[in-house]
Structure formats: structure tokens, C-alpha cells
Image (cartoon, rainbow, N blue to C red; front, top):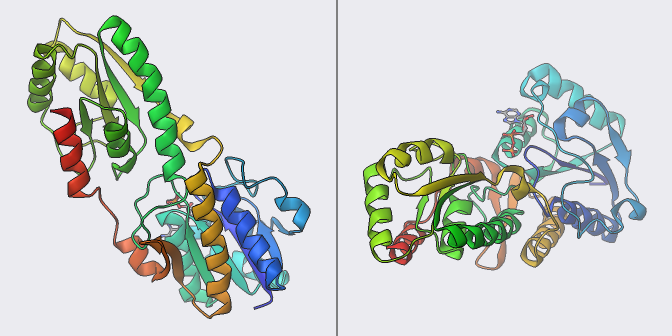
Length: 323
Ligand code: ADP
């Protein structure tokens, strides 16, 4: 391997910059040439490819977002699109890839590897934390911190007015941010995509808490909740708790931004080095992750198929603490 192309793809996540920087630095350390592929697979198809130098990665570790930009690419899902992408890589002499992204991006990487056999390795970059093969994905910790800080502020106003707030956090298929934000901010209840909570049970819990004089309440709802989003649930509850002043806050894209936490910076940095070293050692079509504080390379096919759900124990803890 002489020339590695690095890209960020799919939903952006805080810490992606730190992962790019670590990948590039590790590449330089091992005397490799490093190329940035801008806008994910879209830029691979559109030939938005540039040689990276130290100046490109100066002061990016601490910044949110991704300086290589990210994109979703419908064209990459087609064989013709991937062919164009491969031709562009060949033009630049790129003989290996590091793909930073979520399950969609890694699915694309797996397919591309099977078609063209270009040595490639994935780094889990997503706030959703839903990839198998790693305890944590890059961006998840920062997103949880952002959600908890926002909920603290909502708590202040909720308490002043004895209001019931429904706070919607990100998580379409997985409730990791929700369950952590719920535990970390003393929520009255947490609704996640993995579990259905009947509205009646939620109403009962809120009534019981009101009886205990816990007048202000915060309910966390993952956007992909089985009973609907925060707006929908608040509407249903309104009729049953007419005496309550009910408000809804959707945290939305706030959760994707901001400087990465210490944990995300360190995770991203370790995985960037692991990706380059993995390629050098001939580990292809795998994702670099950290399990029990050790670098682990998991076949991408396993990392994406083994879609992770919230741990039963975490759900139980959240329940104990909100009853
Ligand atoms: P994430 O990586 O955050 O899960 P997406 O699911 O949007 O984000 O995937 C990012 C990109 O990865 C897609 O826009 C597409 O270019 C590529 N991709 C996803 N799934 C596939 C697939 N089945 N085949 C080829 N490319 C894919």
C-alpha cells in the first residue's frame, strides 16, 4: 500500500475530523501518501479528490463536523456509479481506502470491496452507536453530552412552571442517545424504538409521580419511538392529563454539532491509527473498533448485520430510576 484515500460519508458526527486527522497522521508516520476524498462517495464519483498535507489537518481535531464534508450518494448504489468511483481512484493511484461513517456507508464499502477488491477498512462514525464490533461509535458520547446539557436547561424552565416536557432526541432505529440522556438527566420515562411503552402505562407513571409531588417531568422520546415522535405522544397524553401544561422540544441537529468530547477525540484518534495499521497488516473489509479497551477488527459484514440494540440492563436501570 502506497496511497490511502480517506472519506467521511453519511450522517456526520462530532469527532469525524479527529478520525481523519489521526488517519492522515498515522499514514504520514508510515510514509504513505494520503488523499482526501471530499463529500463521501459522491465526491469519489465526481473526482473531488485532493492530496492531503499536514496543513490540511492542522487544528481540525477539536472541531465538530468534517472538513472533508459528508454526503449521501444515490449514484454509489448503482454499479455504474461505483465503476466511475473506482476509475477515479485508479487515476489518482489510490490503492487503499479508509471509510468513516455509519452502517450505510460501511454497507457501501463492503459492496465496493467485493466488486473491486481495493483494500479498505471502516471506522464507525455515527452518533447512533448502533454498530456491532465496537463498544462506542465516534460522535455518540458528544451527542449524549449535548442532549443532556440541553435537557438540563429545559429542566430549569420545566420546574419553574411545573410543566411536563417531551424532549425528542435523535435515534431512528436505536435508542442509545435516548436511554443515556434519560438516565443522565433523571427523566420520568424514556421511549426507545426497541421497546413499546403503551400510552396508558406512561400516563400511569406520570400520574404516580405527580402524586409524589414530582410536579415537573421530562419524558425523553427517541425520534423512531414505536409509539410515535414527541409531538404525537404529547398529543395523545394531553387528553388524559388535562391539568398539565405540556410542551415539546425537538433537539434535532443540535445533537450532530459541537466540539467532540474528550472521549470521542481519543476514540477517533485511536481508530484512525488502527485503520492505517490494519491496512498495512493486510486486514481488509473490516471495521476497526474498540471492545473492552482493546482494538478489534470486525468483518464489515458482521458489524452491519449485527445491528446493536439498547442493552436490557440499561433499560432496566432507566426504569428503576424513574419509578
Ligand atoms: P450512514 O453511513 O450514516 O448510515 P447512509 O445510510 O445515508 O448513512 O449511507 C451513506 C451512503 O452510503 C449512502 O448515501 C450511499 O452512498 C452509501 N450506501 C448505503 N447503503 C448502500 C448500499 N446498499 N449499496 C451501496 N452504497 C450504499
